[in-house]
Amino acid sequence: FFFSSRRRHTRFRNVTGVQTCALPILKVSEILTVKGNILFTVTPETALLDAIDTMSEKDISSLVVMQWGALVGLLSSREVMKAVHSNRGSVAGTVGEHMDREMLTISPDTEVNEVRRVMLERHARYVPVIDGKVLLGVMSFYDVAKAVFEEQSFENKMLKAYIRDWPSETTEE
Image (cartoon, rainbow, N blue to C red; front, side, top):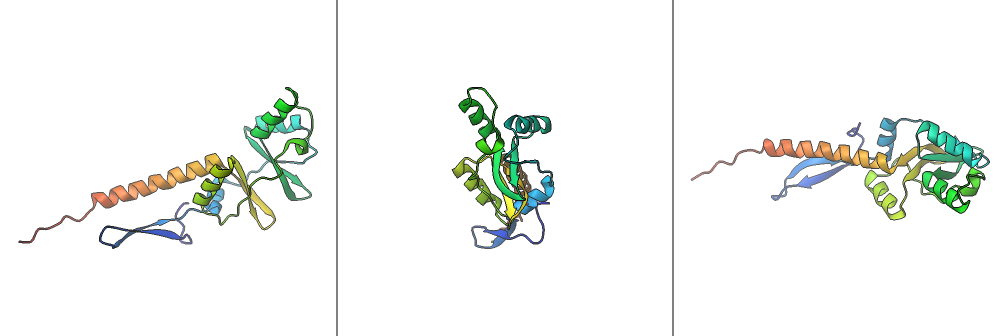
């Protein structure tokens, strides 16, 4: 999954300047391929309580808000908590009244390190992935962290194998 032949690679050089290995650069599209394409959506007119019920039943923390086939917002547990707080404990109202309308979006060609940086800067937990006007999925901070962890684990194994198989130096006198 992580190492398709289409990926760009980062090259490393050892102290002598000799290229030692190439590590692939992970893209959002690769994570979406592994993650799958299940996506839960609501409309702005959906009652907030119905959206909360869906989030609870599906054990998810965000819903994509669509209207006439276009992405118009995102409702996450953060917006739900703000709504409960502003309504003094009530979950009255619609999704459209409480959704995030200015959410960050990314393309499938975005590099995961860029996604990680932007999510940290903007405190975004969920980011819709858009290709043109087509919604492909949602990346969560968990998805990014898991992918980075798996890639770093692979790199760690490769580096350990490289060190283990280091050619022995012969001393010539």
